[in-house]
Length: 440
Image 1 (tube, rainbow, N blue to C red):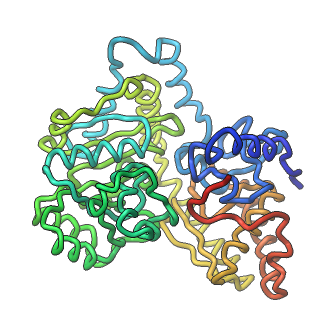
Image 2: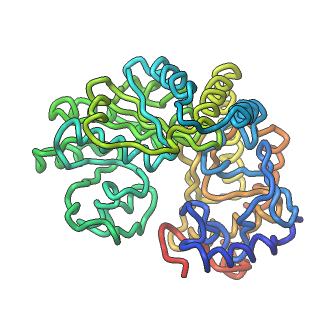
């Protein structure tokens, strides 16, 4: 039985007093998982094992660094490549040759693209992509589908209606600080609802950019992606695929390659460099050349560790057939999770592809409390667990089988709590938050 992480909880409470929001990433807030109980900080991470500040060891069967560590934490081959360039010097007045190698690598993987620009995070890469697209078309309005980060261009959607972004992964995002003049420039449509995009196009003749995730948790239906591509061509809009979460998770490159629908720009981050900061914007030559008509520049976009990590990561993925193994692992997890939830008669939808699973309890207002109880009881079993699984190449069958045994046990607890209406009584702290809220 895992002991409560006293040091981690104390440090998180301290952090909230001196760091607005407690952390740099909303998705790592302890209140989203297990308020007053979540370990919050790590001392060491290797494979899919994490050691917290109190020395407790956990198996991460949730997000593996919010989807960034596809190969596993501290992968020895990626670390070796990064350590080499650090020893040689990670920054210089001159440029690193690795960024040219990575650019060639990415356009070879994506024959529709001819040029690449680099940044270090997904949010800023999406801001760059939208800037390039707007510069190319000379039109300000953007239609979007999905979650695309923290930038003004995206949050501007909630200036028009405070709940415009609620159906795009994170509800409650506040556009405070975003200029009111951007109202009406970012227009949302939902995945697989082509009629919503058609309506936007009909009502906005000055639409210049369409941004969307080609996949997150649901498959495209009725040629959805093809129809989006056709609309972009018809109105002369730049089509951007945000592959920050999906890229390199299901295949080596962008998931759009599997659907055979090709954008004008694709954006990658997260899994392309296995935990080291790196992002890429690739695209067609005429569109990408517009980057030279607008100012896009930053010193640390030229450091060397990110490109070295990305090259090593992508090469290992290709050599080890990583995505094929993850698909097999995900199918094994999915099959057994379906069996276990049926055994306990738990109403829970499991969506997504095998390498990226998402859980939704189906008990209405009780959902968040049930999710919190699941996280609480699985933490006691030694697992970081929440509303899904980002499958990793580092998942060993012994870990997976132990996880399935534990979740079988915990689902039994949930079943009894549901039947006896004692879910909230079993919680040892507050119910986990949902979406964006102030912490202090």
